[in-house]
Structure formats: structure tokens, C-alpha cells
Image 1 (cartoon, rainbow, N blue to C red):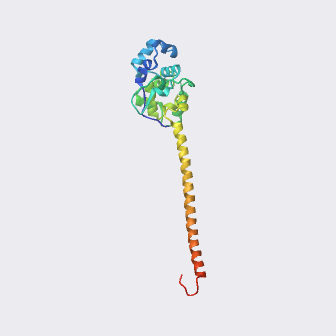
Image 2: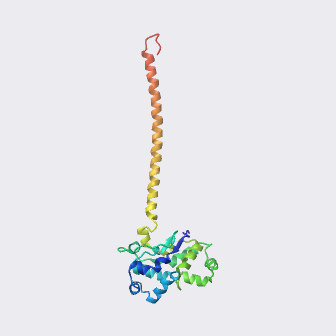
Image 3: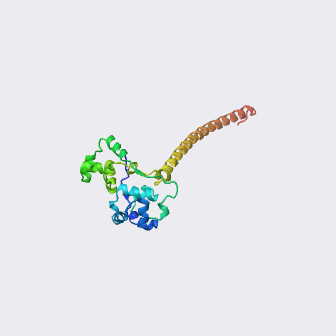
Length: 224
């Protein structure tokens, strides 16, 4: 298990989403099925948004869920085109089964350990994180940090894979290409070194032959 501990919820983006997308609360309600009054509370207290609500927003507005998070930077907001995917959007989802599998496969990751760290009962925490009850995003991130789990192995964003939210795929491909190119360069360098050695040996042999020829053709008693 690995985790990027600098991942945080972009609360500024959530608070300003109406303005960024040029949508009224009623339009948000129609697209996400979140009541106007609930959406108002979310914009006023974005820290309290749940995973379930965040997914309604993401999938209702065609915004990859990973774009609601900061990766090692402070809250920043852009324009509509920075968030909304016009074509080919794939719905995001929360995979509680994968979280349970990760916890079960790691003897050091227990619900009790996470609950003690966060200050909740293990039963309540487990029910929350496995979506039996409400799952606050900040609680989810805290548990991922305790378990050393990458949040995006649980909060699945297929669009992040295709669009490269952190350019991981393209970077990996480039790294592989660079590694392969370096191997070829090393191989060519070895061949060049070997050919250079052989050339020098041939050059020495040529000089020896030239000296021998000069000596054999020189008049008797002359110095070559």
C-alpha cells in the first residue's frame, strides 16, 4: 500500500463551483439530485461534504472526481473548461470492497487502529468507510493516510487514467522509452569501444608490416 499524504480536498473549488460553471442552485440540483438547501450548506461548509455527495456532483456535472482534490498544492480554482469533460466522461465510483480487501490483506491495517487514531469507535468508522452510513471525504482521506492507502485505489476515477490527472501514464511510457534508449546507447558504446580497440590493433599491425617491407626492400648497407 502506498499513499500521497499531500492529497487534500479542494474546498475552495466546491464553494465556488456555481460561479465557475455558471450554474444556478436549481441547475445544480437538476444535474446532481442534491437539494438546493443541501447544496447551499455544502458550499458554505465544503469540509463536510461526503463521498456520496461528491460523486453525485462529479458524475452529474461530468467533472472527474480527482479534480476536486489538491496534490501537494493549496486550493486553486480555474475556469469551467479546466473541470468539465465534454465528451467521453466515465462515471466515477467508490469501491468499498477494495478498501475492505486492502485492510484484510495487511495485518498492520486494522479498523481499530484507524478508529483509535481518528477518535471513533471501530464499528462506526467501519460502517462509515464501507458506505453503510455517510462517508465524509475528510474522514476518508484521514483513514487512507493511517492505512497508507492511495485514496484513488478506492475512490475510482476512470477519467484520471485516460486523461492523466498527474501524467503518470505518459511519464511511465517516456521513462520506459528513455530506459530502452539508454540500453541501446550503452550497447552501441560498447561496440564502438570494441571496434576502436580492433582498429588500433590493425593500425599497429599495418605499421609493423610497413616497417618490415621497408627493411626487406632497402639496399644492402643502408639504414632505414
